[in-house]
Length: 144
Length: 144
DNA sequence: GTTATTATGATAACGGTTATCAATATCATA
DNA sequence: TATGATATTGATAACCGTTATCATAATAAC
Image 1 (cartoon, rainbow over the protein chains, first blue to last red):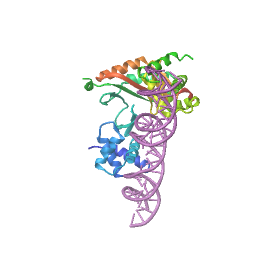
Image 2 (tube, rainbow over the protein chains, first blue to last red):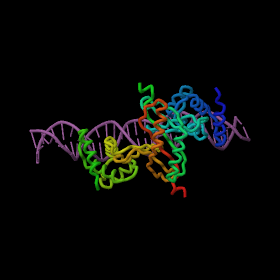
Image 3 (cartoon, rainbow over the protein chains, first blue to last red):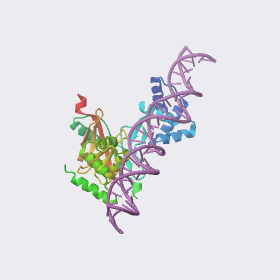
Image 4 (spheres, chains in turn orange, purple, cyan, red):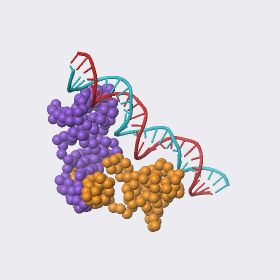
């Protein structure tokens, strides 16, 4: 597997903050990168635990925070209030379609909507920073 | 004050579910309607407590749930994960601009964005149900 | 290896929300 | 208005995701 770039980014971040390497952090980074989903901390915990049974929740949360800091990971909060973590490196900004039956996520981006969002917030005198957009519906598979 | 319509809706809902009237419920409804903000349960609790010192948190949450059920109230969850409750009766669908400095809310609706959102989700084979859109930025007052 | 410092895991604490439960209020009926 | 069935209440425990605490262990510069 070619985790090279992401590993490099993580190591640079550790170095920049005078933090140390650890087996746990390596394992968490790899488990995170090898799972192509929007993971909750608990889901990641269970995955890491298979290879590193002694790992604790705190380490998962601490490491996810580091991954977010260095741009490898983005924390998302949807309606259930549970934090989910998605890959950020090499992913451009996007929003989400979410199936209300099966929970399927689709990443989308619509430049025209983006443009109108910026126009809209500026029209109200705001300096735009970011946005969240989630479109809920029933996906093709679930509608059958 | 003309709370007539909202009171009627609430009473009809209670009747439909074979629920009883209570002083607390009346007071919570009035406090909610008389406050034109996006209240947290805790904020509403403090307001109600001024007129009804014995009220408990549970009753606030229970009554807010009833208000949501009968369409007088909508629960919102933003990034902090804390539920906020806004008036729904007589309010059309809208999204929110949120100032990241002062927390100011502005209700907005952009028909063109709405149209594109529906188009976008359909293009991915979803049957559209609803969406959330929050635009974050710094408002005019805070930018000075 | 020694030593200073950071990381770890167990677990307590936290904050918002919900469930539990005994006591109380409501309301249809007599 | 008294009765009795049922819903409501408030206090508080429980819950759940997340964070803080802290003693022990791992890391890495020397």
